[in-house]
Length: 335
Ligand SMILES: [Zn+2]
Ligand SMILES: [Zn+2]
Image (cartoon, rainbow, N blue to C red; front, side, top):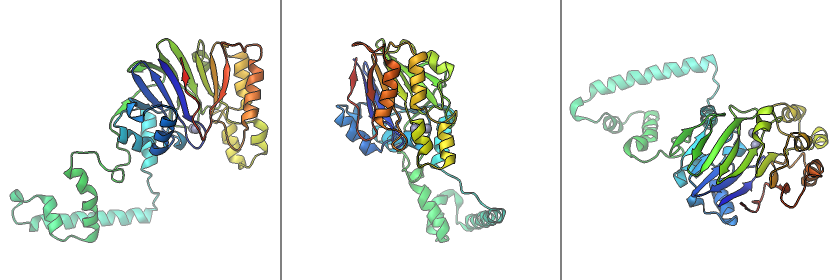
């Protein structure tokens, strides 16, 4: 059986569960681990049966619960390498420092090294002494003691570091590349590049047991490579982020409006309608509109735009239109 369940969709968190054969994957982990588990149970899925997490890009609404969820379930995370690096940078931001601060830091580090060197020469017999114990026993300065306490659990135990010690630690990381299909158990994934302001954002065609599911949110426009992928689908999930007029007249500052409207921003209802009218083969049984903006869109506007584009193609068997929501899961779609 193949099952597709959107748990949440929108700028406050994105997550979808795809089951195929014996495999179950989570696409994006934008909800907290607790909320993710709650919604999975609501949708009739057991979080403990997830086999892997796949990440489309590193924006917060797609990775918010990633580290905690992957750790708790002990499952691998699939990224592109650039997305993984960007995610790690996001979790370990570096402070900007002035030249004077940098000089001061160098001076302190040199003094610490000097102090360390002196302590070790003072030690009784290096062969019999664990250098860490020596430092802990010899009442070093408070700063050193704190540094020691911070690293000690990591060195002492074989288990994973705590979130505080290393927020980027994951049970396992697997890399994939756009344009290179791969499989996770019984599910085949075909990742492709999408135009969005992230390090290396991707969309997917997932397929399992002959069912093809197209998946793309967070893209400024639909380029030819995406159109080429989105053919002969059984299910199409596509971002329908904003209504152009609502965005233009809405509350966002002009710079944010420009970002959303740009070629690396988000898809408008009109852009979706244009694709559904002219670029789409009309074959999918389900069309799901996703990542709707809560400020710059209304579900009815997104629905009407897509419906009129699909007019004439609607049949009992194809193009059933659904809207993914932010605050509650969409009913599971079974094939
Ligand atoms: Zn997003
Ligand atoms: Zn994004």
